[in-house]
Length: 228
Image 1 (cartoon, helix red, strand yellow):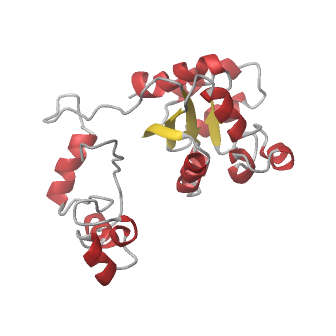
Image 2 (tube, rainbow, N blue to C red):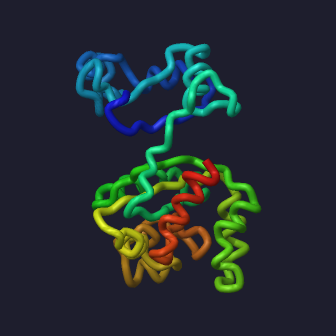
């Protein structure tokens, strides 16, 4: 657990603890491949220790473990784990609420990783209207879609990520990978880009990314220092 970054999630479902345990499969991945070959540990685990994922074994354990990663108050029994954000040679990417709601989160993350970018921090946010306005302030009076962009960002859960590269040109390289703001234009000119594959309109264009190289660090800090 302490050998590197981990991703913690709060999952919600009726009989959620039991359902998640069933989806995980047996603790020993070798045993899982025999008894539950379709389970997460059977597919992605190696052995009893490197078994891909952890799941709470009871409702009481779930409450305790959630409080470790997502404390209900600043005065918590445990110190919340520190962010993995590095703030070096990085840029910001936000998977927009419509893409999260459409179940595209996993596909977008896979595309990012498969194209040579490293995700060094990730967190889900419910943005408040003032925060969304502040974050998009640079586009106010510049883009006709400004109000729609703000409304989209506050319409549900979004996922903010710090994207890292090998040099200071990461914002420009990632911006090129994301593609034009208009998905229709992206599909014509840059069909392999994220917005070409997952975007719908200029507002529902799957992801936000930092436009100006000098703003990369500022946008990452907004989510992983100011809002966190």
